[in-house]
Length: 352
Image (cartoon, rainbow, N blue to C red; front, side, top):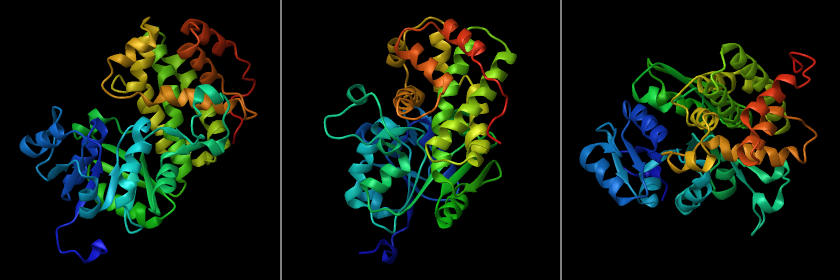
């Protein structure tokens, strides 16, 4: 039966109540009834009993369930807010209950690999663009959903939770998805722009995490604003070349989901990616940092995927390449920085 004929009140669905999922659920709950999905029964019980999720306060307009079928029946619009490492599995869990009438918007800044059974990034080492999936491509591959969008921009969860002013981009090939996302999310403190280049917006949000780790490292080394200005501007050039090679447009990198998000994340102690770089520069090991982080720093997996992509692309990405060596091959951060300072960029801007 098509859900449109049902007389029950409609909810907006949010899958995942990490810090970003909780912040978006609260923004949605200002205008709509919201049903969130959490895997663990104790989290569901906590939300329904005390309007909080692992200590994060939630609106009274939010109820929780751990039944994917219930969410898909109760909600025509679903926001997927889960880390990229578990994204494909969560989408597969929901897939049997999704129909073409569902409208899906995700807020995940990460990449997934489309490899053959038994293959891993360690075994293949080199990957082509066709083996990399953005999150919208995962949704389209795993479900019958058609109207898919992405939410991206300088949206640090902590600031959103405090109700500080912010803006975001909803990107989709379908104008209807953009308009629906805008009407559900937009408020006096939250501006929502539209963009038809969903791949470019997704790629921008992914690539900026790499530069954010490097920015955290600069801060951890106690280097100044001049060095950060160098990193952010060179980082943007690198994002544009990589984004182009991965199928996005220059315009998306220059917009809110690209440079807007880049500037916010490269300057913020609230950013998980920035924190990874900062702590690496202070001498902690990557394993130790990841062991005590609440939530995934998406940039680490992205560095590995982009490094493997560079092996097949005729492209240099010095920040990504050197960060890979710092994270996985014991290159000292100071050495990586020296390399970048001496790298022969002979022109300032070469993409306009």
